[in-house]
Every structure is written in structure tokens, then in C-alpha cells.
Image (tube, rainbow, N blue to C red; front, side, top):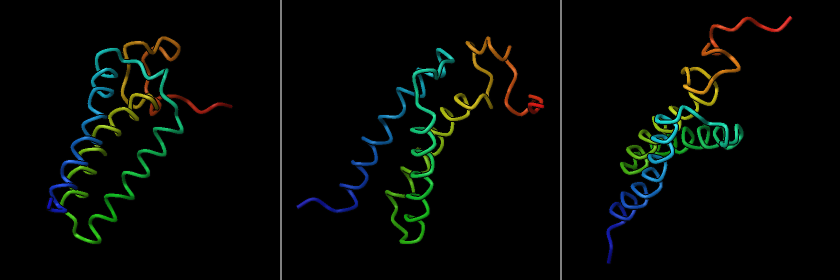
Length: 104
């Protein structure tokens, strides 16, 4: 019979690992145009919730994989929300959301 922690580690490897190719594509192309704002926001919020839950019950696989997921999804979110300048950000001329003036 499989150890529960091993199943959790394997599941986390698959789910967190699946985000790495997307983060790499965003890094290489600088484009997040095809990614839904709401999907990124929901995934980031859910990942923080899973990490909090893992910390509460002291579950090693949940803590490890969700910590890594926060990094990868956070990287994608930073590009999507223009916190990190992108290569294809011609509409905003490379400015970040932090340096833009509010609309009057």
C-alpha cells in the first residue's frame, strides 16, 4: 500500500510541475494575453488558502508544493498585472502598474 505522504508529494509534483511550462512561456515571450485575469486571481487565492491549510495541519506536501506554486503563479500574475515589465507591453510602453498615474 502507498504511503499517504508519498501520494501527496507525487500529486503536488504533478500539479505544481504543470505550472512551470506556463511560467517559462511567459518568461520567454513576455505575453500573458491568453491567460484569464480571473483564473490567475482564483488560482493564486486558492494556492494561498491551501498553504494556510497545510500550515494549520502541518502537512509537509501541502506546505512544500503550495509554497512553490505561489512563486510560479505569482510570477505569472506579476506579468499579467504589469508589475513586471513585459516584452510585449507596447500599450503601456513598458511601464509597470506601480508607476502609472490614476485615471482622472
